[in-house]
Amino acid sequence: MEVIGCKLRQTHIPFKVDFSHATKTRSAVDGILLEVVTDTGTIGYGEALPREYVTGETNQSVLSAMENTVIPGLLGRQFDNFESLAQWFGSFQQHYPALKANELCVKTLTELALLDAFGKTRQQSLIGLLGGAHRDTLEYTGTVTAGKAEGIETYLQVYEDIGLRQFKLKVGFSWQQDHEIVQWVRNRFGADAEIRVDANEAWDLPTAKTRLAALADLGVVCCEQPMPAACRDDYPELRQFIDKRLNICVDESLCSMEDAQWLAKNQGTDVFNLRVSKNGGILTTLELAKIARQAGVVCQLGAQVGETSILTRAGQIVAEHLGDLIYHEGAFGTMLLDYDITDTPLMFSRQGLFDCRPLRDKPGLGVAISDVLIEKMTCQQAVFT
Image (cartoon, rainbow, N blue to C red; front, side, top):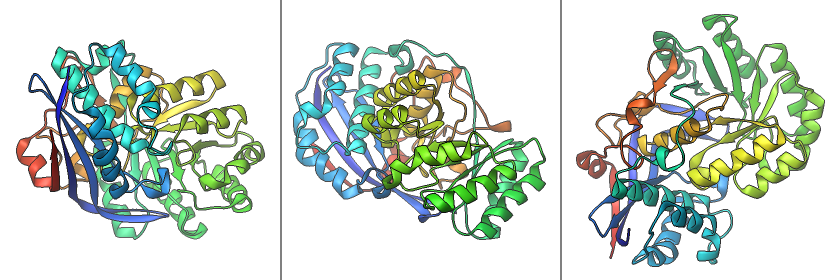
């Protein structure tokens, strides 16, 4: 497979309903798509949703890195087999020394497009190229926005209608509000509903100790990212203090291999939140999972708010291949987006379930991109040959 052309797209998709957490309220998503064209005419698609508060990247920084560094080094490059492609990504930083170590969305964007193109060229599914799946059906969590009651009610009504039993609530505004939303969901869905919370870096160590203890008393089973990533050294102390009364999950604190190694070595968390976009792609995310397993840390599948079916499918491939993730997030499709990149959005259905088997034999990522929809979401584009 030889890369003979690339196209970068800046995209915008409105939401059907606002989504809020402790650091941001969104009514639309602005993303980046990469198309890789091969010598056989095959097109592979990649997606990234940079978040400055996660990896330090912005849409503009990713576009600049792609235009000035990555794409010039891609054009004319050949990959003879999957092993050579995987090895190339394993030394991505060496191929592009000008990139900073935290430019992980750049790597994700490049990796997904190349893997999709390679699979399509060989008429092989990516899950097959990785060695197969260990799970057929994924059960998804319903993530609940923070903010006004009417917005929360919109999400809860949808989840009630389809029979969800797992929930992740956005918290971190005030204890009164956090307490109320936990009680609201508990009363609405019953004692057997599994409730997790995500504080999105809202608290310092003393506050986190107080809040996590209170949340445990309310039956919350896990708290994601209670403190900022900059407070990494405080995570082992918080984990020791809470003493398994609930699990601590890291998200913004877990981007790079170095993050994973430090957290594993210093026992700073119970759960890794794996998100393909912020972790540098599928292959690196699988490596993070290996570190977790070796340290006795469990993993869950995370998602970027507003991702299209490209990133949704990338996350599903990780979850299918690993087979032992304890929670799965994402696959909202047009429940959140005004439209998706495909006519058949990848969305969970009754009880949060998604059957991955129908996608298993489709080449590459297995997402059928709509030419009409991709043009609709495109704000600007640049072609490279």
